Length: 443
Image 1 (tube, rainbow, N blue to C red):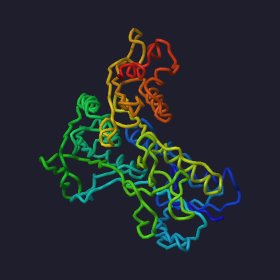
Image 2 (image 1 turned 120 degrees about the horizontal axis):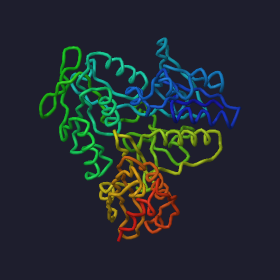
Image 3 (image 1 turned 90 degrees about the vertical axis):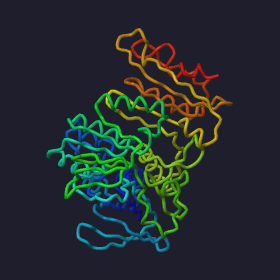
Image 4 (image 1 turned 135 degrees about the vertical axis):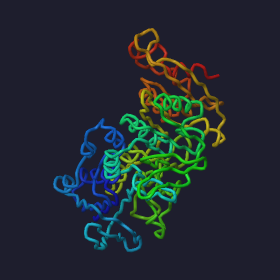
């Protein structure tokens, strides 16, 4: 069976490896538009800040390894521009030599990921204006930073914007964040976001909230960012306002898309077209709490969906069980964690809810070096089923978010959360874990 995979990163190569490990009867061809296979995109800000000393450390397996060790026909610079679903063919161009290609398939996996959103702002093509998605992107930013860069402007206050703002500060740059909304990190509720704002200001980041970019000004290199409230002098700009699934080449195929243009898939990663699968950031993910499809572009989901797609493509049935919306990032001293629904989302979904917010310690309060954390739970008002939570603090955030994500996955109530037998010793926890402290206050 001829299997073609479009996309050579997390989802695509997870699928390819599952096929290789579970069958030797299939011919696998992977068409990657870029030059690098299977790399950790989430590590790029830490390479730029010199916490990781080389982009090479982010590469899980090279194109050569996939070819020589696993027998996968892994190609680079191969851009697929058309999928012919009737004749089961993919067409495109090989950017290495400019030649067109046409390949047939028996089963096809679309794992094309996402691309950064860049609005049609005048001056967006000036040198010094960047997005961050790939290793070449990171290398271009690092090269630019070798010049006389003092002032950096980050457009967008989401996860990439925050991580990169931290990286630039650590490199000694003066940083401004422009965010058109009234808060950073919109996936957090407003009162939790205030903690993020405070941390940004503690590191001398200038926050320009409720402000919209209109254009970039300069002769050849960026000099100013023009907004609806004035002009900001800058030497480098990072645009980080969101991502869009790479699915536009499928417009005339009949393949159904859904949230944000992501490909609609079922639990087996199948599209509505027979023998065509999709996985990762370009596909939908079923949200267990919202009880509907969503689009949350994360490497964790991409790897899982890729594995499941690969197995199903060789007739080993396995289903994707869905997501609950868990994420965490480091922002200077703080860890910002969340899972499930925010209060804002619960309200939009017309779910009757109540919330509780507590300030507590990560370990026993009397033990040395206990750190404060702020924890918010969102709970169904009638059933006491846990709907979501947000936690911000210096230590112990990750393990509480993971416990909460597990509780959400299993539709637990606050009463059941109180029944959990969680590890305790003063250097690690209080006798009542912070999650249980919050659960006890639900009425």
